[in-house]
Image (cartoon, rainbow, N blue to C red; front, side):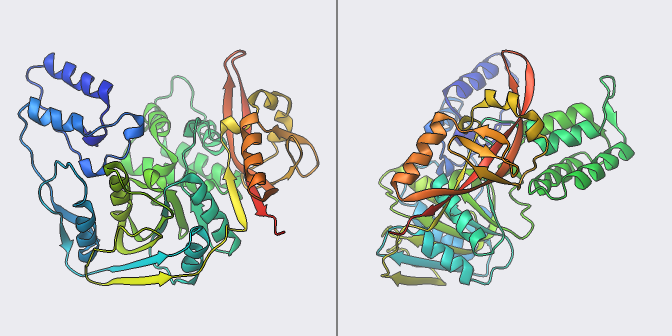
Length: 429
């Protein structure tokens, strides 16, 4: 079985052909949707799926029934995707759900659409799961910060960028709390529950506790009878933060379109500020965003690419207000944002920190509340901070986002590292 077959790259396709050639009796099922091929930047190309069908004289089946979205949302997506030039799909998608949902299309004369979309979200009575989709990480960070500033519960779906979930401090604590010996293969139910209680007690104030509990619940659901140590380690190491976006605890989720692929939400807000859809790749990315919505889709754009679409319950609004850049920006840091070797000096300080705690900003990095040095910014991070400054934003606040274990390959020693969340405010002059 090849899942997401439209995302095959050259090496993966070569491997599949090699396996087939060396296993004459092998049966291969490839499942994919070329309309959702949005990873061309890393070598993925649906042409490999098309070549597989032709070369192997494969039987093609089109699964056209949509069980996710209301009828008019499916009709809207069908109208839009028909503009893609070369498609394997020949038949339009049919909605299993006959009632119509709601589509809001707000057309702006201005750029800087982060502010008005946050205003629209704040004014809306939301029900069910809600997600705001953007094209860029910076937009997603801005929206998250502004929603939080408005007192709303918002969570940014982000890649862990260079660290494995196995190295997240809260997850590592849970694994250590299981007290598994090298010759232990099966985890007893009592041991499992004791470790979970210890995790909750120790990290009850950590914003990452909910993520850890989601991982635990998903592993329990996949392994209802017996829990093996090896299965747990593989499950965690192969998991990604965005895999658990469906469990937001009532929060508004904010994500780039790429990170939301494969997910679904009752209400989707789609931010398209200055988007050019001149290529099929752009159109496929937008199609993925549109098709995340189950019941309501709210599109905020300054583009004209939806002007010719006519479907039921499509509410069009024109906003002629000229918007400025937002007053608040939030920057998510990664392992590349900090000087990793510096943490060898600050382990005694880092061990007293937890996700969500405030940090003090210095010229070189961040200190804890007692003025003890915690981290130093890398040159890459300094450059990004300078870019924000040139745009009129001043770094004002910082707090602990992730605490992650990192291994120094030269010494073999593991250190806990702090990845801060940085808050910028716009200078009004």
